[in-house]
Image (cartoon, rainbow, N blue to C red):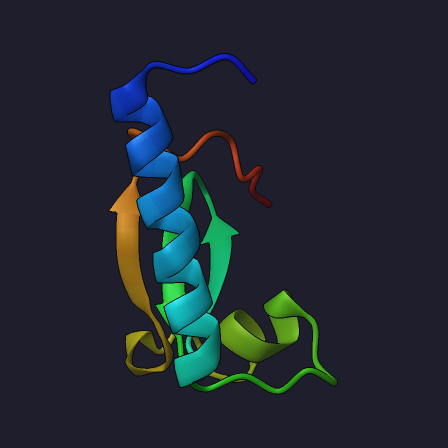
Length: 77
């Protein structure tokens, strides 16, 4: 992908940050054009079971990281 130096630096910083998140046990997911982070994740459950049905939308399970802007179309229900 052709990028400017500023874009390349931003992408490299993102890669490093995502690696750090993974190593620290932080997981990311998209919902309704927002990016969220969580440290409470059960891989045996799908997103809907984990973050919506079981918790009733309990925001203590996740935190919004980005709303719109740089994150493109996560879909929705």
